[in-house]
Length: 124
Image 1 (cartoon, rainbow, N blue to C red):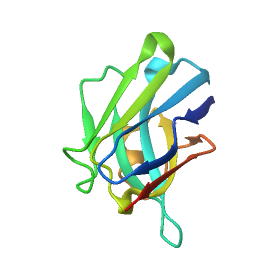
Image 2 (cartoon, rainbow, N blue to C red):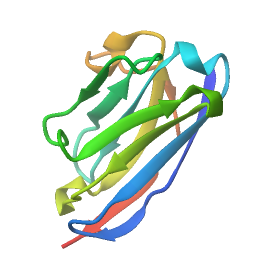
Image 3 (tube, rainbow, N blue to C red):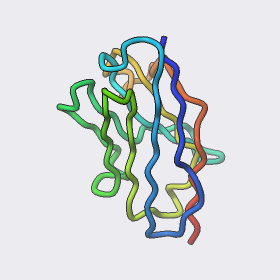
């Protein structure tokens, strides 16, 4: 098991930027695929981005491509989500997730390790 703690959420105006961080502890961090999901009020949780353990591959939802960038620092056991050009529709609780199985970020079966979430609110 790995424990995940998100930070960096907040209130920002449309067009602004935020950087989310997810600090991990527990099992060897570098072997896990890490990623971000989000859930807006009244909507289902959706995939946002993921990054492999060596950072050789990244994956993004179409809705955030070109605006969000996922990265990780294995020495700090932390994964980041840089969010630029934010829109009101990006408003959601953002969750960090981790799993050794990459397919869980795109498949029906979700990742097995989750953070508690951090609120991102984008005002128009």
